[in-house]
Length: 82
Image (cartoon, rainbow, N blue to C red; front, side):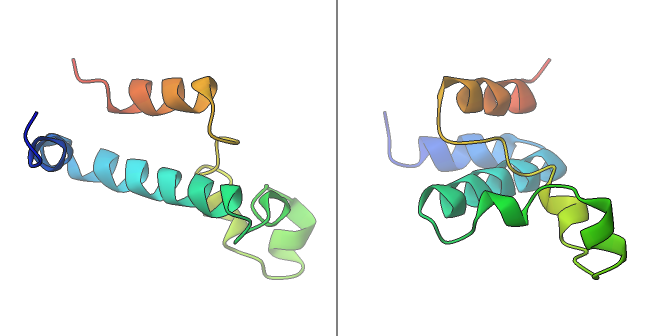
């Protein structure tokens, strides 16, 4: 396997899917490394619209839990082509 194959595979994925994959993996990695708490990512109506924490509108779709087989299946089905 060449070193450029993962990069080429990533560049073949459609742009929106690629962006979503990268941000989902980055969010999960940040939570795994305790840079971000998962409690700051979940959707909470009061915190969003009364306290102005608007990132929760997007971040709730980016966090799939910890690194596990379930996370790998989510990522696989997200990038599955055809």
